Amino acid sequence: MSRIPLMAGNWKMNLDHLEATATVQRLHWALQDANFDFNAVEVAVLPPFTDLRSVQTLVDADKMSIVYGGQDVSINPAGAYTGEISARMLVKLGCKYVVVGHSERRQFHGETDKLIGGKAMAAVLSGITPIVCVGEALAIRKRGEHVAYTLAQIDAVFGEMAQDLAPRAVIAYEPIWAIGTGEVATPADAQEVCGAIRERLASLYGRQAAWQMRILYGGSVKASNVASIMAEADVDGGLVGGASLDPAEFAKICRFAEHIA
View 1 (tube, rainbow, N blue to C red):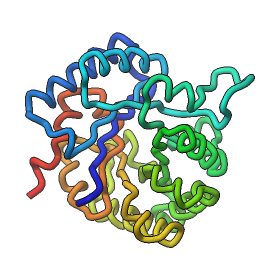
View 2: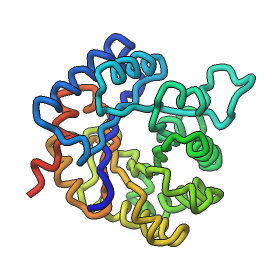
View 3: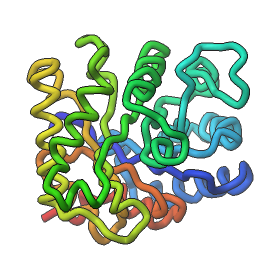
View 4: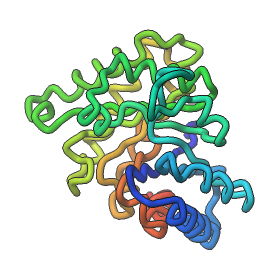
């Protein structure tokens, strides 16, 4: 497989800066003790903004191979936007990734696909990789419209992104009904939508670009189910929520390859 898997831990609004450094340190130790190959799987943590400077200091000082990023970014480069964080600010903190369009941002902050596309573009143009979240609610899946709905999100978010920029993005398919519920899409469910996303990317940007882009699955990912999900052809990693707050559990998730037959 030419695409390097990415396991990204989205901490959401959890852990202060002291807890953050302890969590990253414990994750690093757990992976180091297991002789983990960081060249085979990329490991990222996505802390709250207030933790980023502390995480940066720890990662740099200990020369860790763990990378990190933000949970959101402004569409604007600078100005009178109280409470917003620009892509340039994230760059200065050494962030490699930023999440855009998470379902919680869509639900609680009314973010539209157009806005999310603008955020993704702002990240890419600043040199940060956006992790673009898409996915359906339970009612949509029950109607059998989950593939069409998710592809419409892809079309709207990537509609104005040029072909040379799109491969810099990562996509995370997160069925909303599986986020934090304990419910998880079956490996076949994940592959159905992730495979359809790759086909849509191929139609938008060509097969080579589509092959380069990583597509993650998110939604109650844990050590006990990650190997079967990762065995699917078009699943290139996980956007992990609650399980990433436990360094030992997240380390096991990152070591999924040990459990694939």
